[in-house]
Image (cartoon, rainbow, N blue to C red; front, side):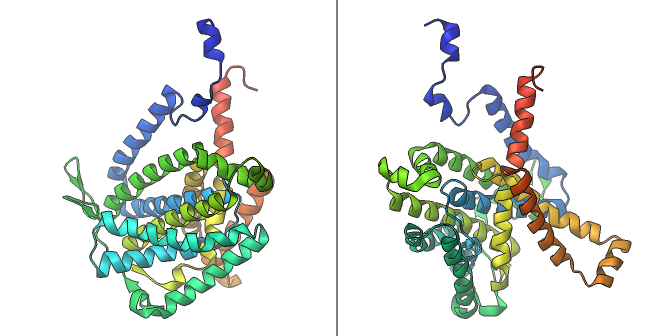
Length: 362
């Protein structure tokens, strides 16, 4: 086979490579450089928004593995986030475990709860599974409010989990001779974890388990007929999803330094559904795009609502900023499902393909 013909052959190995081209390697290198340099130019408020966006991205990747790649609809994501947050509060704060122990412990706690819920997915699907996971949110809130020795009850509890790895303290970093604030320092911890989780998730979906989960999503009975173990992969999806959600919850608790049961309600689960719908269901980087978008939108609404004329109008109508946020989330979900089912990721892919095909694009 000639060199020209060999270059045109599409090989399976090329499809599953994480870095398919030199351009993708350069893009990832630029992304890492951005993570290192961007916080230096951020204000505390901007860094805080970016930290919440990164935490949300980790949780959204977990939900996308379950819903986007395995087809298991879940409204119980908030419960797993709460499990991670309270685990971090207890083992990281009360037991004084270091970051390298309390963060995996939070993920493990979430994974165990996910493994307990996973078997329900074997007999239920669609709306019925969504109702079961919805019930999980209310069960979790009951536990959070009444297990006072661990959670502090309805009053919540402080989270004093350390975020240092050896001499590197992500609460007070010094980068290029500049002392960073707590918000700026947390940016490094959270977004480095986002990069790691994104790479791990991309590897999972390209691996044999990932392909099996996608087969379950597309047609579970057909997947079972060709040898895919439904029980194994449906439970695995719940375990991976809940572990990442709990990790995000642990980071949220350590950053906020306080958690209470009201933080982990149904609206939070709906927010994560909005993230993967807006970002792109079944696309890992779509989860990150959706998390950033949904995290930033409420801040924009708050800024717009603070304009005197708009603020006066909202107060006259008895409309709160929270209700506006809820309406916007619902509207975004509807619009993206109707007009762009694959979300922001699909828009980005079309833009990329346009410039890749230029000047022959049309």
